Amino acid sequence: MTTYRIVLEGTTLPGFDAESVRPQLASLTKSAEDVAGRLLSGQSSTVKRGVDQATGLRYVEALRRIGVACRAEAETLDIDIDATSTSPPAPQIEKRPDEKFCTECGAVINAKAEICPKCGVRQITIAQQTRLLPQHHRRFNASGVRALPHY
Image 1 (tube, rainbow, N blue to C red):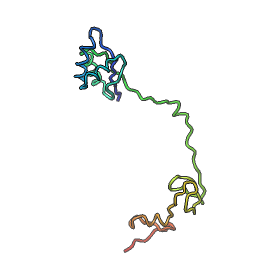
Image 2: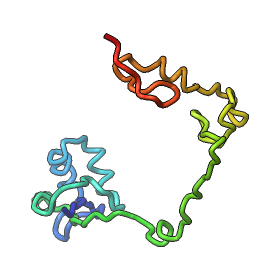
Image 3: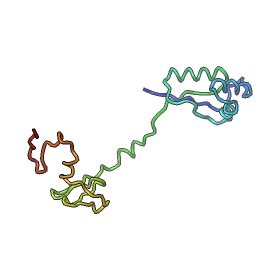
Image 4: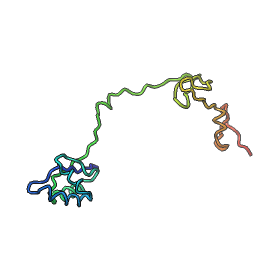
């Protein structure tokens, strides 16, 4: 769905003067007159975002009726397609059978290491992982053999 934003040009339409438009704009936007005055200071500003086309047209009609120069613009995403399509893929990290990934930083470390040499975090062993699981989740023992249920 295309969404629109309402942009005030910062001026009044021909035939309207800023002094008479400012209090009406303040009333319409439910803001103070000094805020409405800043909206009519000559610089364009976005006052509403994310509206559908019909709602955007209603805003523009109401603002033009009181003499405010404005427009509804379709919102677009600012995506640099060239930058996203040319980035190289993340390198695939390979590990040997006698290695494992650190549970904290993901570095490849010796499978028997108790502490990661890269980040210094103590590694959880298979036995510790088994003890952390509730009894009904322990379907296999540490050697990979299916555990018998306790009756």
